[in-house]
Length: 83
Image 1: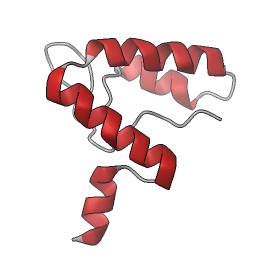
Image 2 (image 1 turned 90 degrees about the vertical axis):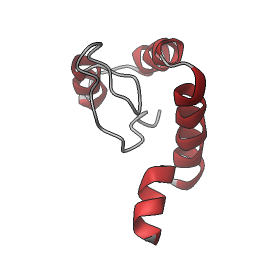
Image 3 (image 1 turned 135 degrees about the horizontal axis):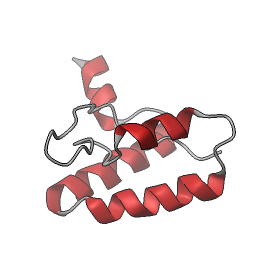
């Protein structure tokens, strides 16, 4: 199973249509939730969204997504819980 790239920073850039947190557009977010979506599609989407993100945004995504994979929760959600 491939973990969703959502890192709980769900705000969409009005200019690009991409989420500031994960880099996906609304259509991609919907496709991730479909039962018939293949791991191949998800892996390709992860690759593409990492190409969309740059600089601190990419580094922040990578760190939080890795934390989510390793611990079951994004860094943003972890911080909210700990406050």
